[in-house]
Image 1 (tube, helix red, strand yellow):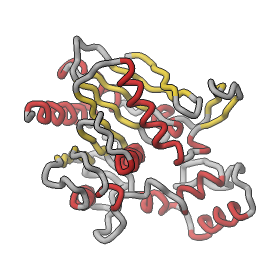
Image 2 (image 1 turned 90 degrees about the vertical axis):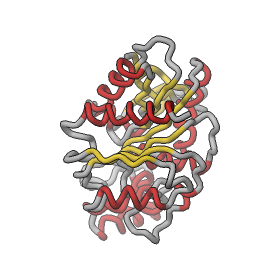
Image 3 (image 1 turned 180 degrees about the horizontal axis):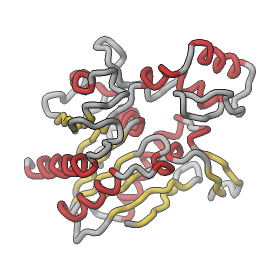
Image 4 (image 1 turned 60 degrees about the vertical axis):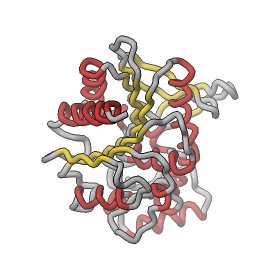
Length: 289
């Protein structure tokens, strides 16, 4: 396991973790992490990396983007200027740059036969957005791990708070920090909050059958979807939630749906089970070729 720096087109470096205790691996799984994943150090990433390495001879990257940490400072390697970024000023315009930068890093430095692209929580929503706009032939399959229903995330905020975000945006207070927490736990500036609520590029999966699923329908890849049966961001019905998402894909009969019993959004007490499920899924795909 080692920390890696991923250069982006805009001049900042993302911080990922590469698990590579393998011998001549043919495959790698990249998982785009969710909000505050680096700060919270969710243990299931370690289990996934160690399990794929030792049981499957498969490499793994825990791919943090800007929202994985609350705030950090870097010198932009293109402009030479100091930049402060993190979840507090998440910019959805960088989604494609972030994901493509990880894929480019792997392509430049290694020679894998199979590249699997996954995402956890809003990281899953981000790869839906990316794959809907980029029919990237370098990717073998996708894996959506507990994708987030944005409307469910916003339930903790009152109508008055959401209207206040719009008011602050109109007053051009983009860089000011909200006087309340988005989602009840997420501190961010006005611009980021406005994008989450009113201009959200990753509000792309839903519980309602007649909602807008155009992004996931535009994906040409097939893949897998995994969720815990106690996931609180799945509108009280994780199984139905995942099945509804799958029903709106082009390859619903080819996709594999997996349910991890009696665990929630970050797979509490089921870290090894989620790791084994991913390993078995990848082995199944590779044996079916």
